[in-house]
Image (cartoon, rainbow, N blue to C red; front, side, top):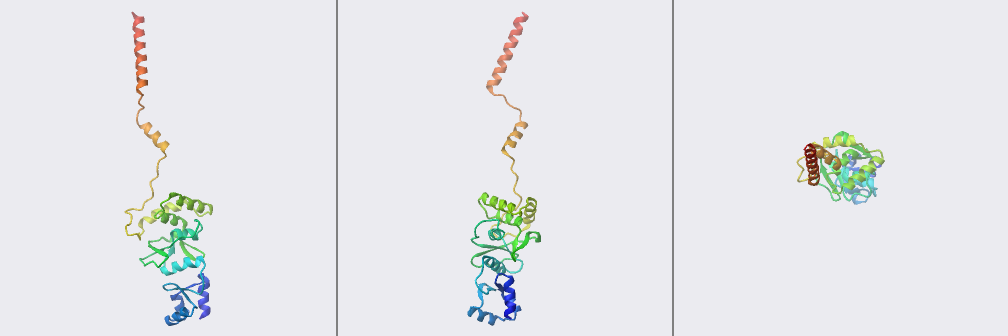
Length: 232
């Protein structure tokens, strides 16, 4: 029994779920006694550890607490994928159905395409291209997104085409926010200012300034007057 529990925990950064404990042969009473005796440590409802957790263990614990089909997202995913500096203040997890978020986590309900899922160090997480789509919902400083893209490109994880495809797929997502946006579309491409000025200039005829018009008119009148004098 203990060997089976250790085998589960070894594959999951020291974690084991209640379902796995049952599969190892423990009933609820035995689980409770092990928690009281310090042999198991409750991390979230239905999620336990055999001892202290690494950062990867903390991230996976939140994913396990979210249930089947969940995966790490947003800044917690950026941390795991090493495309952002620092530690995420909250552990964001995308879940397929609405669930209550435990303390220290934030569950976001959304539909994830299989092409947007991956695994890093045994932890289900969004692909970088899906991560960029998700971060645009929460980032207010554009430089933060730029920094993530640069780091992802440096690591060979960034693809513009894959990101655009993920944006198209995300149009059908189920938003977790209480006030969802009416549409989630690809941002419009802005025309460079110089090109816009050139385009506007080519559409409308150039208007001569009053000074130039006056000079040309005066020259024309002088030429006409000189021609008449010569003729007479």
